[in-house]
Image (cartoon, rainbow, N blue to C red; front, side):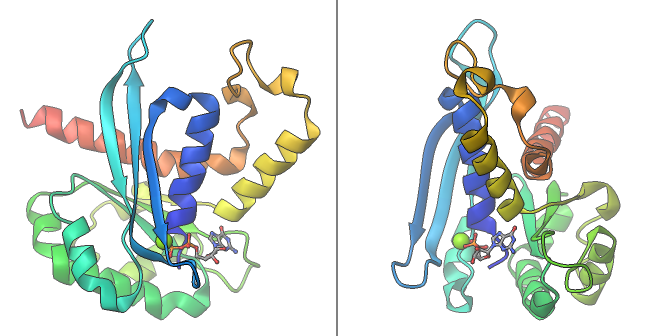
Length: 223
Ligand SMILES: Nc1nc2c(ncn2[C@@H]2O[C@H](COP(=O)(O)OP(=O)(O)O)[C@@H](O)[C@H]2O)c(=O)[nH]1
Ligand SMILES: [Mg+2]
């Protein structure tokens, strides 16, 4: 419940507005009653647009894991063959133990690979809209990772943490679309102009763009 589905949906919405051709696929499978992800969400995004063409240098497949404890086997499958990880942390202090539990399960399922293959990662600390005093902020992430005993898997933690709020991003975009004339925010081709992207989207987009950059750097330096 940290906001994984929300995060990947917000990224998809922004990419669809700015550059619809960069969204190749987007599927989220939710339980009708609880709204929880029952299998996983999948998105395929294009990165590195080739100039003067509709093509991209890379297609990035993004999967989210299903959160419920009984779906461990599903998570195991989703984690197979990954090139990078975006760890979405729930900033709600009430969910501190849930965060610990998730990080420890990740260590159990994937710890060896993360260490040996130095799998690139970013951390997105979501729900920063929560009031001060009730949330995990940027500088408490190290404490969380130490408490979960996973700090050995994630070196240079400080430089890989992004904090934000999907809820805020969604509200800001909604306001903008409602209150600004379309001919101002859209280009002549009908695309959303990048300069109007609300600041609240930055940490979400960066947690994704940064992982892609890290992965590409790693893959190219080893080949
Ligand atoms: N306050 C707050 N709640 C959020 C935010 N993002 C998601 N949520 C809520 O957290 C719950 C779980 O979100 P979801 O994306 O389904 O989480 P997932 O289980 O990690 O996929 C939902 O009730 C969302 O409304 C946020 O930025 N702020
Ligand atoms: Mg989900």
